[in-house]
Image (cartoon, rainbow, N blue to C red; front, top):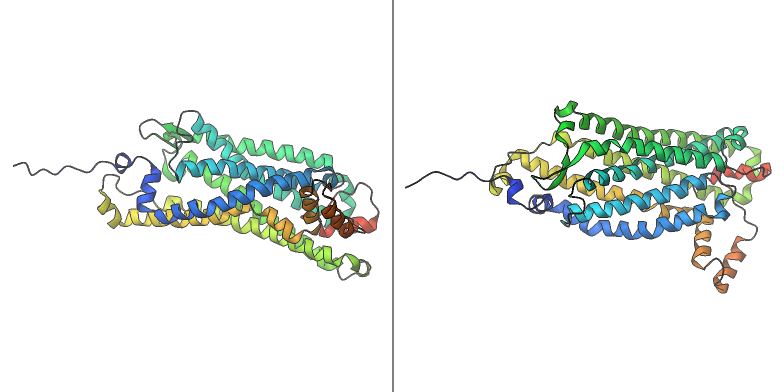
Length: 379
């Protein structure tokens, strides 16, 4: 009698895809992604285009350089959600969206561009707001629509440059039938090109930049509170409602960016702490193995955090509507077919009378009007 025991095959051969592995050993994260993520898609696929149309419309961008940043941000966020939708089909639902040569590299290249760009755009209009509020004499020179367009183009090209490294990092593995890290980019462990590049770029784009945004916003708020104690503010009491709403928008957008970006970055950077276990264990041994258990627990927690942080790319529209009175009215104006629906248009017109709006660039408006820009940048 032959008493030899047949060694179990690799886990990669026993399961058709990584999605199947996660469904078996880390189902919680997969479940959350499949249930919650579609809500972000619905909000983002509808809200971001509306935001882009409003911000880049002539009524908003004519004298408001920050509208250029916010319009570009809406487009960037929409692009990321679309690419994330493709990735969700790939990982959570098992569709081979980019498991082919060339497409693997191109997809990851495109996937990183809007992630970098969205963060840089928030920094861009935050710096503009800082200049407009804390250095008002430089505002007319630095905060112009033309300059904003040039900066957005530069930030887009810079994001493309950072993301281009993903073309080298990722490659399609014909043996595994999946898109993997290129072996040449991951040959030296923690000092490999992939590891170093990920640490440097992620810390820079998703930790340092959000913290810089926080610092600028703190400086802006400090200046606003200082101005609020002056006699000039007392003469602007009729605008206090808009000022309060604008301050809420500033805080909501900045802290939303900071919390979501830093949280997602930290959880991704923890991945090297949780290595794979023995690939040739059977399923029962994998469930009882501490190395595998720690990895799958981490993957579950990471997926839940990433799903929550994904809302950052979808819910700016909600923040604008909740805290931006003028933005809400522009959205309603758009929904009513630019005033063609007479009843709703008449309601909007009555409520918009005697209201004016400015963000940063005023192109020569009087001081009493430009003073209100301190509270209107992010709306």
